[in-house]
Image 1 (tube, rainbow, N blue to C red):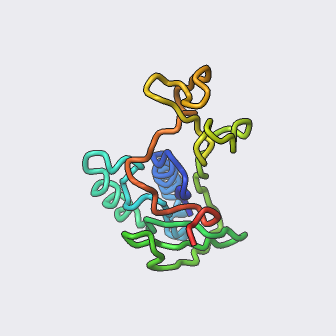
Image 2 (spheres, rainbow, N blue to C red):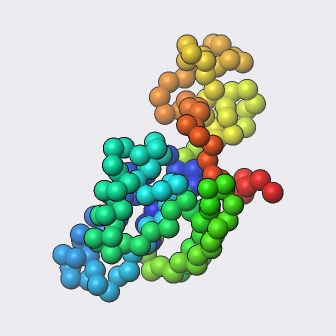
Length: 171
């Protein structure tokens, strides 16, 4: 079980890890005994959180097929137990289309990306994920003496996420 949870912001390492794991298992002549499933909150394989990069959808789907790695995309992980992951697969409108109980002996799931604890929940300073709100001059609108740049900045998504964490799902 390899993948990226809802709220993850960098999907490339999950794909890289799946390919490395597949290659290592093949070298050890164990791959035929190890089923692999790639679980991702991306709306489709190869989206990469960016709407795709060139033909990343086709290339990555082809590579996963060639390596016999199954996948569940547009997925929301609802729970992880000692030996299984429960996943809801969403449709185009963000409604549950399918549920999966996926067994595993080993897993690597990239966690949600969030801002630092020190600023979490400060209204007007950060968004719900804990990232600093800024204007076009890199200043916080409420406190203009606070400037932010880089990975801590709240960047609006190109489209609203469909795979919200289970604890932040609208009822």
